[in-house]
Image (tube, rainbow over all chains, first blue to last red; front, side, top):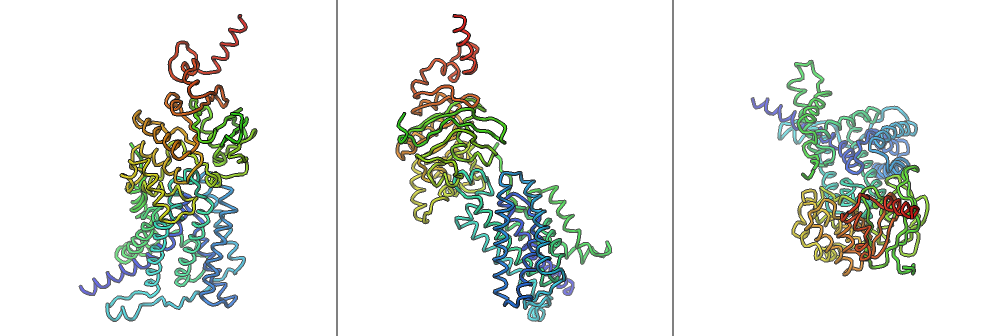
Length: 302
Length: 271
């Protein structure tokens, strides 16, 4: 009995921590959705692009770890800058659907650029954090939890705190929330949209880099990261597209549910339900709570 | 009104097109003297909003363009400016329909108006207190989410937010739309006070001709993108045609200035 409970705890905690990896990817989507009201289909490509560049700097140019990370983050700011100037500004007055299509195109450009610059083979990324159970926790709590999962959890927590403080207490955060509510009114009182867009795309780029590091360390830095990022879609549907806490909680729910279902119900379906169970959950949310758990309710005066 | 330096805004014969095709303004000229309130009157679709957006340079975001004529603000052309630069120069538009940031609190809404100014936290609080003197109602509600405030309060938020940018000139687009008469009076009192105490020049687009003229110094009446009549507020209030067409004191079935002009020319011919 005690063993079964312990096993359940292990599945749950493992799932929750794995979920924070989804949360990290989802954060990038939320940032851009807040400012442009657009689902950024190129977020997956940004994850791939950023972490491949990070690996490239380290492995091809022998740049030390920290410096390579900073360079990759700066590169993502440049990507943000180019995106704002070359894609978003010309589409300033276009419909949200047009911008959505543009992000799909942008995704292909980034994928192509990344592979042209750094090659197509799978790279190994060693963060110095092993993807194996932490001995201390295994000995004392009898739980087998990966060190990488714990790191991802901590990183996700730090990022959410950082972003929360940025939005709530800084001037540019206020500007961003204003633009998210009504871009036209924001520009009528002198909030420069291009600065906000630049900030948001750069921040989403850096978040993509962090998420890419975590995923790259686990699964190898490879093209499949692009599709992995789409796992963020059910996360966002559950958490709400415009909510940062929602991205975190959504990720935790998806991570936990998918592991628990896989272990306890999976065998009845012949296993491997991890891949689609989150989407089933997402469909239920779309039916009964379309704004997600934390999404901003559409407030309308009556 | 011939001395140009006395005018903070000088619009000369502008033509505005949307999408390079749709002609919204044919020929609009108007002046706003420094420190005065000027009313821009007309029915739906006459071109009031388009005129204001041409001035605040917000036309571009709606694919509109000034294709002829010129607009001078404070003695210089606004040709090459964008909306945030105009705010920096002291020209702020309060858009039609209030357009508050619904998910922000009332106070955050007002503070967002100071975005273009480099102010410290202390300066912002000082400015806030100053603004709250005009909008007492907003101070009581400053922690509530803007979307949950009443229509009148939202209009006050929109004006207060614009005032935080420390404008020399305000463009008000139908500030009384959909408000109860008592609130309309309250809004106009605030506008009048801002004009007198803060010295803000105001260009006011309104459909509510009567109350707008009573609170203005000068008025223009536009119809289908053309200025049909202009004059001091008093003279417009006493004008028979304005009374008939805009103040609802109608005897004949004439609906607008074009009908009046047609009738007059017919009368001339028969004489």
